[in-house]
Image 1 (cartoon, protein in one colour):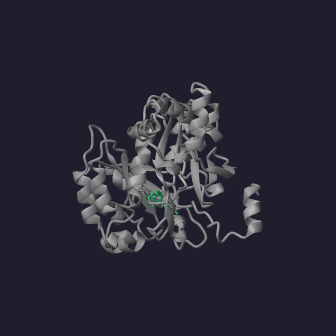
Image 2: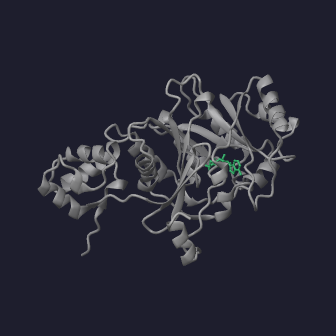
Image 3: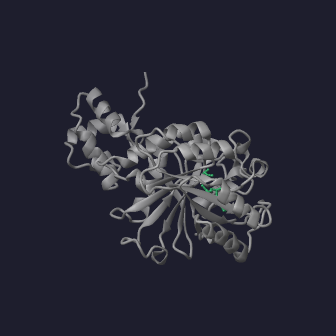
Length: 370
Ligand code: SAH
């Protein structure tokens, strides 16, 4: 019988403790291994020098630690870095590191922190009308280890081992369409012996897969919630965000009303602004009415235009007019500055060629970073 090595990247700490116990080894080594991997960025068991040589050798035969490999790294003029990563089956995803602009956050003492934007799927099944990732369709879910692996690669690749960071699940994919792996990833990320990322530093963005959203409301580790609303009428949202045909605005907002929020927490509503489609004063007033009774803030995302996306970005004047209507009526609103547009790292711009369709020459060119 062929026994497959256990992939430590997929393990929560108790799983690793159990795996060690199953081999007749003390459980406490699991904590040491977690510290090596997540606190020091060491993924070669042979280098974990506080384990005996004999143990390292034995574990090397039973365990692997799979890590996405960096195919290409691109840096935007604004400091945003996008990584093209290859997974163990050859599929590609993108992950983005966005430096906070200290000028945007004068209130934060550590305004030099960065935000990692992670993917949760290869492609996406949601087919939102303005999103490039949606054009790819869905290839497969990421595993928990692949979601966490993006953080490990970003931290190691960009030399950020001692830096605090925020995480947004706003890369490729719909996190609530890959619920179990996403939640498991949050648990691995939160482990105090590992990266110790508190769920308060994580924001999960979703189109509103309702059963999964209801389930999220019961999780012990609950991230901040962002809802991709984008529209104020059922008929229009049906077209822009097709899952609305299944779970409409009304149901979605009722679920938001029931969503347990801690003191001072709010739900973010993302609203992609499309010129002459959803950017009128009437839209703004309808949005205010829809959000009444919800502890909400609104994040306006002026469309990042791309070839193949049949919408236009509204003028700054239209965006500001929309924002003013919200704020005059007491709704907190911000306009998302799009980051990394020059390297196609901005919202809705993450897309990878499937390794199947990329011609060998093109693949080689990608591998060489051209
Ligand atoms: N599937 C999740 C996670 C993706 S988050 C979700 O939809 O919430 C990415 C955010 O960028 C979403 O709010 C998405 O609607 C938005 N977005 C997609 N395409 C965009 C584009 N072309 N311009 C600006 N924002 C876009």
